[in-house]
Image (cartoon, rainbow, N blue to C red; front, side, top):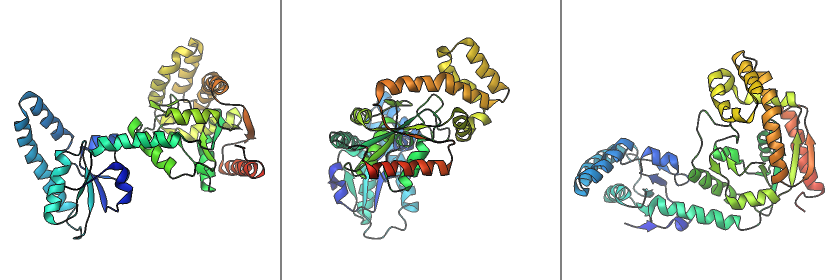
Length: 354
């Protein structure tokens, strides 16, 4: 069976990249652009593994072969039925072993030109890590957008990107907004492997010699670690400080986190993590405001008593002094466009990284 090493993949023009691992393995991380056609689903994979450990390898293979054959038959009848004669897929599993080879053997017998990723996802993961480290060894022209919680930093990055600037949205890649309340209730957070894979793809698409804008972050976003080499460069990058009045920030956050106002019990659960950092009186005020539906009072209080002091401490010890300061009355599209325009004017007049 012909194989392709991860570092050689870009030199081929495969019609599809097929991940035959179980759905949970695929969600954990996968080759960029791959589709998931599992030859064993999660429960089947668990059963085969149990038989392997408790009985023997032969019995596990016998049971697994029946499941794999049935699943491949389903894929042939559904996904592959309309593929042309010159169809050429790239297939992989965990280590380039039996699962990927099973599908590739059948497709080859049909007459298609199937290839395997040499070493499977395991080798691909090594390739991603090595590539990311290699790219980040080089100096990159970062700009950091800083500001208190609720100043619309992510929205500003989006406006800059819409204007043609290079942007890395670390929180978007991590599926987390970087705070105690930052979980994405719909997607859940990415895994570290998925985060780094997406980050590699994004960085490779950018020109390191031109400005790249990021949001000020701590070294962790939720449970994920920002790669050390990018973190070091961020701390040394020019900082653009964004300021917005407290009430305007609270209004913005009320719009950005509707799942908390819709589910006060979830909000009460989330603030458990920071109760020990505040006085009993403050915590009681927060709980009373939430229970009474007075979310604006809660947001203003948690900003002024928790998030703002925490940000200022972190800002002082992490990033350099601001090279530019911008202010907005509200976090609205017209204000964000104006701030983005001011940043472009600054770059045009005197590049911030100079």
